[in-house]
Picture (cartoon, rainbow, N blue to C red):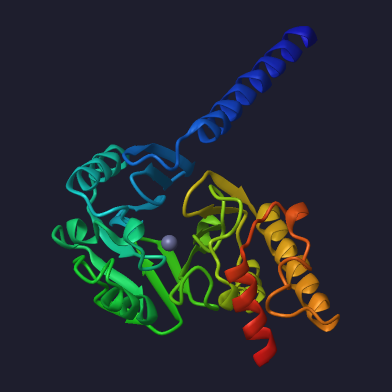
Length: 290
Ligand SMILES: [Zn+2]
C-alpha cells in the first residue's frame, strides 16, 4: 500500500515535471522575431501572449470581454492571424487595447479592434509621438482615451494599471501592470531578443528611475517586447547591470574621460552589452549637463 502510494506520487510528480518542461521548451523554441504570427503561449489562467508578426501581444480574458496589449506590425495578414489566435483563446470581443509605445510593431493593427468596438487607451506622450513620427503618422487606431502618467481600469473583475516612469526605449514607454495576476508587460524597455537593451544614451541616464518604478510593482512574471516570460529576478538582474554600467561611466568621467574616449574607458563586455559610441556620447552629454 505504501509502495503503491509512493509510485502514484512519483508518477504524478513525473507527469507535472513533463508538463512544466513542455511549456518551457515551447517558449525556448519559439521564434519571437518571425515576420508572421507564430502562436500563443499561456502565461497563467486568463492571461496569454501571442508571438511573431511584430512584438508580443498580451491577451487578458475577463467574463465581460478581452483586454489586449499591443497589436503587432500593420499588415492585413498579421491582423487576421492575430484575430485567429485571439478567437482560439476566447469568443468574447476585445474591449480595450493598451499600447506600450508608438512603434509600428506594437500599434499596427489597433484599428482592427477599434472597428470591432474596442477603446484604445494610451499615454499622451505616446499619442504625440505616434502623430509626429513618419513611420506611424499614417497608421490609424490612435488612443482616444489618453492619460498623462498613470491610468487604472477596472473591467470584468480585472484590474489594469498603466504607468509612465521615465523615458526608456522611447519618450512614451508605458508599463502595463495586471496586479491581480502579478504580471507586468515591460515591452521594449527590457531587451530580451537583443541582449543590448534598446535604450539610447540620453534615456540611459534616467533608466534606474524606470526600473525602480517597475520593481515597486507586485509581479512575479514579466514580458519583454520579444521573447519568453521573464522572472522578477531577471528584471532585478537587468537593473543591477544598468547600475553597474552607469557607475562605471561616472567613474570614468570623474577620472577624466572625454566624450570621445568614454566608450573605450568603460568596460561593458562582461555585461554582455555592446552599446556604441553614439550611446556613450549621448550619455556623456546628459551627465555633463547635470
Ligand atoms: Zn520599439
